[in-house]
Amino acid sequence: MIHRGIRTGILFGGRSCEHEVSIQSARGVLSAIDRDKYEPVPIGVTKDGEWVLMRDDQVRPGKLLSRDCGPKLNLLPDPTCAGLLRLEKTLAMHRKNEDPVALDLIFPLIHGPMGEDGTVQGLFELAGIPYVGSGVLASAAGMDKVIMKGLFERAGLPLTPCRTFLRSRWDHEHASILNECEAAFAYPWFIKPANMGSSVGVSKVHERAEFQSAMDEAARYDRKLIVEAAVEDAREIEAAVLGNDRPKVSVLGEIIPGNEFYDYRAKYVDNTSGLMIPAELPDSVVKRIQSLSLTAYWALDCAGLARVDFLLRRSDHAVFVSEINTLPGFTPISMYPKLWEASGISYTELISQLIELAFERHAERRRNQTTYSAA
Image 1 (spheres, rainbow, N blue to C red):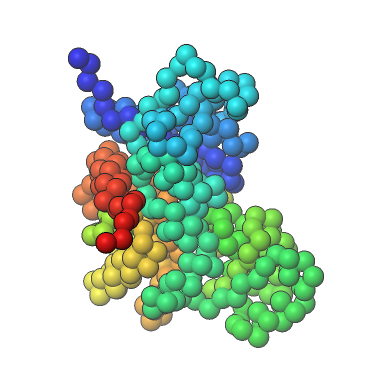
Image 2 (cartoon, rainbow, N blue to C red):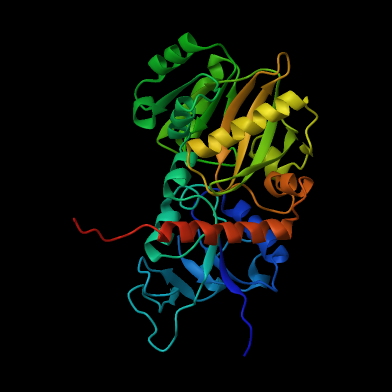
């Protein structure tokens, strides 16, 4: 009898602006996953949303996914189908002479909207398949910075002052929104789309002359816009959280941005930013940030993994929670795996632990009864 490892679907690509970043994460996981335990199945999602079955050697950073990469697939919201269905040229036709592509688990690596925001997690739930990471609620709340901040505020976490606006209001009320922000806090500000990652659409505004272009840029990516007071002379500190009901926190890391702030170019293009792991901080600050990381994780009911980002004011060591990422960048040189490497867990072992946590979470869900009869 031939031993088969746990068939793990590596889902990557997607329809968001973080398509390319997702491919880099998938390449890293495929290169490091323990193939004595797991049989990875690369599943690419094109910019048009088509799912295609791929080979390892086709997953190359810098190359957008296309429908020509392999046979098209579809995951049905039906737990009796036991895998991904292969499709003919039309979505309505299933090849009757081929079995489904059986999967034991899915490791989603689609960053941003349509992957990190609860949409694909809902599909996994309907399909009854275990998956790495947070569920629908935590994924959706973590992606939407407006909802996230509301939950963090309720949990008592320290936040920077902000205002939120709908794009439909911005279309007609430029002056009143500017006046409202100027009355609320002093420059500089950060302006962001609420539902986006990798600093896409984020601008730093130093004066009112920069305001309109920054709002227009954020409005390209989402209907909710955030204007947030900047923390001047701040250090960017990050913590990695791992676990389900009893999570643990890594050592802390610091981003040394190559640009004025850690924007998309600084992260992925210019290669001028640096990471300091562990961050040089007093023990009391480390413990406070680690404690706040767990509070943020529990506030959203996260599972598996998350990276929590902080701003630390140099002058007085005041700490502010910036955001949580429920599906952080996962290349071998990304902050999340690097923090765990510095904490004693290798990249390969981290992948294995996340898969084990996914099965644990799935088993916990299955404890719920789905029938009820009154006594």
